[in-house]
Image (cartoon, rainbow over the protein chains, first blue to last red):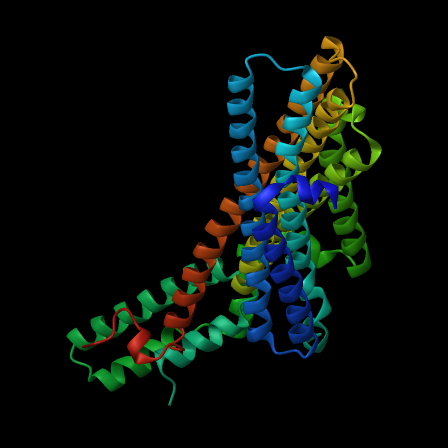
Length: 122
Length: 257
């Protein structure tokens, strides 16, 4: 929670992206289990869209974070390594969160077809 | 009454060959039939008689199709036909497993720095690399050795390959980012930034990035090969359907307007 709070404003769109991703995964699982293949495929591909959006927002958060760190260092003139390390650590957290979302999305996208219609084909 | 299309269809069904080789033989037979019909017509036969005579002369028998299949069958397919099914399956899975293990483990062994990653990070990365290499090996074997080609299956394999490339990049970048996060975290906790530790982290991060990029390049090459094969096989199947008269008139390239 602290890490999320440290991420600042970028945390909100990323959380929204995570929520939509979770919703899409649940929807795709239900559709795939019902064996409606075309509808399942649409939901499955939208999982990837939300995953990529999460990763891109994470990268954006990190770039903005690094920019803020650089501005702060420039304004302060001289800063301790502990402060700089803390800033860089916080700046990296959106990327890690975004890439976690993308990893989950890709894993779900890859393994969803295993759950569904292929059984009926064999 | 037999028509050139029905003869080509029967001959195509009797040939036990990959689609591409089938197309070559069917194209030759169709050219021979058309040539014979036009020669007979120029010699004064009616088109109907010319067609009948040409078919009597040139329509191949089932035995001829069998011997042509034996002659044109790719060597690996011929070998697989002669081996018992279970042995083929063991060989297949052995090759896939061997390729996957050798291909997946070697980058990790080659770049010793990767082993300095925390076990969970090395495990995640190793799993992804194994998945990419295993998927590629399986498809390469299916495509080039067994010549078992199906456009729909290849399209699905290409899709999975694209997903695996995304997974490689996501997991690889996350591992590098987490390394940096840990390093900056130790600075923030008040530990002095030891230059040796910094260099060590940079080395591990660079080695991880190199392995991730190598695997991504391998994945992209595989995806390109799969895409090319898909396009070529789709065209071949389309031509086969055209030769056998299975396409609707509107789908035929040589259709009269």
